Image 1 (cartoon, rainbow, N blue to C red):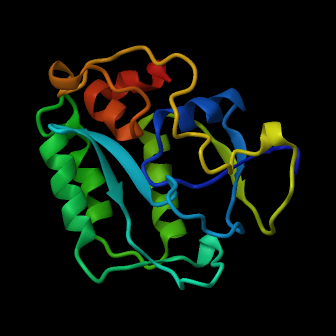
Image 2: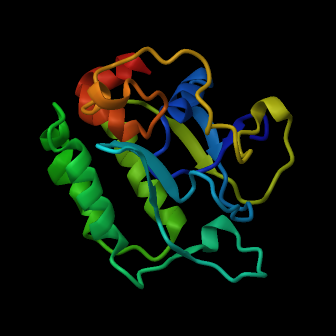
Length: 200
């Protein structure tokens, strides 16, 4: 089991995340026991807005001095962040080729309330795998393991910088700021639809 790569669980992960999973044959472990690190894709995603890159952040409840395991991190619903995210996604992708194709199913993640970030991310990512027609074989960790660096994808900055080659595809606002590589997978999905699997 420990010979498998370990990946963190992200919210609307970047394209590079899915490229790395494919490199391991879509057989991997999802990290559930790590302490929640700040400012990572575990609770944020980057999309293409009319004004450039836009971060969508899922607010979480977290004690300032407490190391909270990712499985125990609760989502803060003090304000309606889901409505804000949905409005942002709509305004950014309403004119994309495939937004309406996915809209009805995708919208439920912004209307249904969730208590835990891990549970929310897991449902979203499983839905994304389904749309990408990707067969995966994964389990979640039951304890924290130190593993070889080449199998450890829990690093904080690993997916932030575009790695490898990202072939340009049409983006709604690329006439304003050009092609932006390695955004959230939904940017690819809404612009390329079923062809997204081939791109990855």
